[in-house]
Length: 368
Image 1 (cartoon, rainbow, N blue to C red):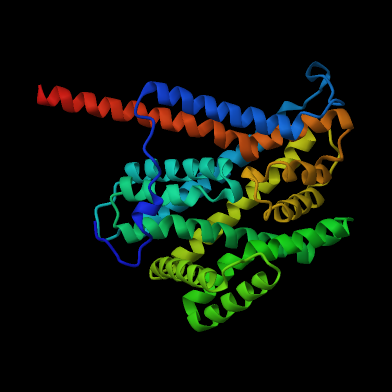
Image 2: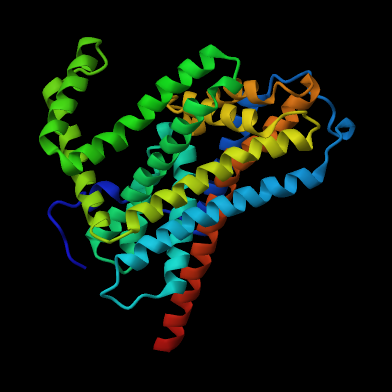
């Protein structure tokens, strides 16, 4: 593998090694169970008015399309990574089966780390580390793929949200939600927009960063202005180099953005089917637009998985149900949007442990 001086420092990205012994795996799983239990209790523990599960009437057939939307969304996201790996390794022999496996674990474990770390900061560093170690691609490419995977995902959501706010906001009779959603979208758009500007207009980017950091310094959100500017400029330049790598491959940018748009559309459709399954009488378009608006509104909440804020804000979506049904409907929705990634993380890690154990045994047998 080639080492590029401009690549992100590998040492900063490598998580501490663990899961070497079965006991550590058990502890790791228990920690994840505790995270789910604590989060679920904090989000839903005060729902004393929830109806008894035995009294709930659910139209299970409407949960089938919800499951389909989730699986199709994850498939689109995984394929996006496979596509980037294939297009950026044309000069090398491409192993489709291996790439699919690496892409699947990169996506799912990335979402797992996003779900358990504040402000979803843990996913991308792990994705870069995992791809560098397992993809057989040069370090620069292994860094570029997760970086652009995130940026294209943000661009995809911005496209959907902008369309919804421009043409569908009239279907939402909640001015506070729309205002908060627009603010959240600006917050959400800052990083990808800055990176894209830096890709083509580096001088303008430096001025933009300077203005924003000065403002944050004046309102006492940034202490060391010069150090912050230097750090942000470095990170933006690194991201811009990753984007330029992607743009060199014809058509790849458009394909990845379209797959990201598909991912967000499918995920944003899930609340409609969950609501319908629990007997809610809602129209698709208002429900979809409200879901996008709420997702945008809670983006800047720095808790893992937007826990706490997401449930309170998404009450706007699920308020079409009777009070006893809201608890269970939101619990099902949170499973698709959050808990499932925490469940899948330890399962994938355990499978990786078994594979490593099997490989070690094969090597020992070969030596014997």
